[in-house]
Image 1 (cartoon, rainbow, N blue to C red):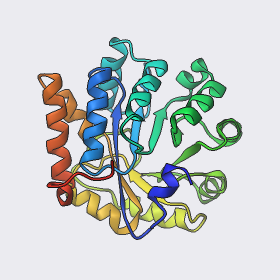
Image 2 (cartoon, rainbow, N blue to C red):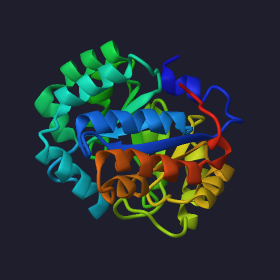
Image 3 (cartoon, one colour):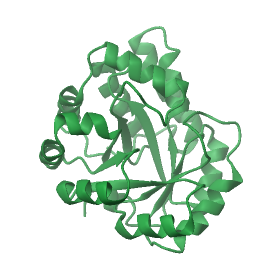
Length: 265
């Protein structure tokens, strides 16, 4: 089993998956933030590869990509960051990207480096159908995580579910990423639709930003994903030290059951 499969081996336990953009605000601080996320209860880390045209992302994550790119972040530096992470943590890593940066780096090279660094998954927001199958074949033991939106037809859900690996990412609502005050009822309906076609774990993301929303998602899905709300905590920091502290404080508010102990190293 790879790291993702181990996390979901006991389906009675619900998972928490935070997202950050690699290199925001810089390489070293990103690594500190990842370690703090793990300390505070993260089961899997979604690590965003910054991209100049992030069409699926709202303004918060768009700005984080711009900050990271301005600092010169690229895939090679992200891999160096993960290599340092692997010195102290085996937390499963899912790279979150658009296809263009992966093509520029080389899909075969990504697959080779992923195997070397025990990167567990790759989520490509703009790859579908035959293209997705071709990428998955190159990745081999690295799970190509599939996105399914509320607007997906039954036929499309069935097609995606047949070739999915690792877990399925159910998009809580139509539109771009961004924290919301309420979780759409579309998310629960979508999870029910997906379950008709697969036994894979289902994670729900896009718009989740509070402890109550996480608990609601855990009621009907296997994992909750929080991204923009964490990135916003990083963005409002006045220093690198404060970025780490803000992340920790926010995580403790999301997962208070882990407030007084270190977990999942």
